[in-house]
Image (cartoon, rainbow, N blue to C red; front, side):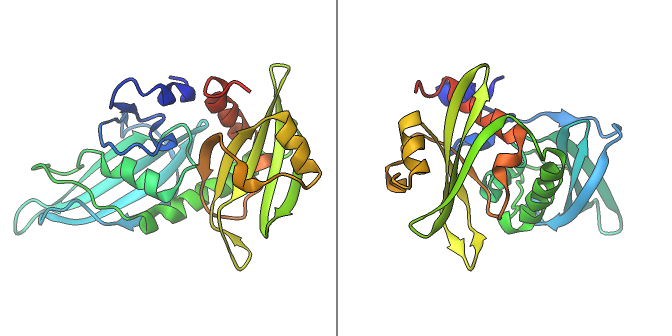
Length: 251
């Protein structure tokens, strides 16, 4: 499924590949479970809040990366009876947008997975703060893999009303696509989030001359997580933006 298919919203069910690119509130995710036996490269593991059931003792989530695919391994340890503990694991394929997603969106996705343990209609209670480090780790790895690309053939950085915004155009299939990266907040030099808008050539030229009004940005596409990342050096992210915006807006 293409990323832009999500915006058609024909029904309530959202593919796991695209769930985090929308703010729609729903837990009807079609989550893809992968075989545990597959050999994966484990990156980092964190302890998270387990399912809300008394028999759960602890839960760990491990970030994995292999063959350009991001997955997570969820492992539950639970009390089978008073004297015996058991462990159950499941592996899920992460949305295609990962790691360019917000902790809240990834939390919603993970909390919608079935329990790794015995079940009984329980549910997870993972907190965004518990998995934010996994996103930061993945962003760092992704940035090291996709630097010095040529798809972004022009970029501009500027301070716009005190915010370190930027703009670029991407050449894709002989057509230019223009984007504005709007910093949503800044705490002592640390970016608190970035919203991406698709803009037209006229708005891009205004930005180049310092005459673009950031408050007039309309065609919102994607919100990126906090952090001082060089988003425009990442070819994969720019391709994702083109896919999202290609049929969403006719500019």
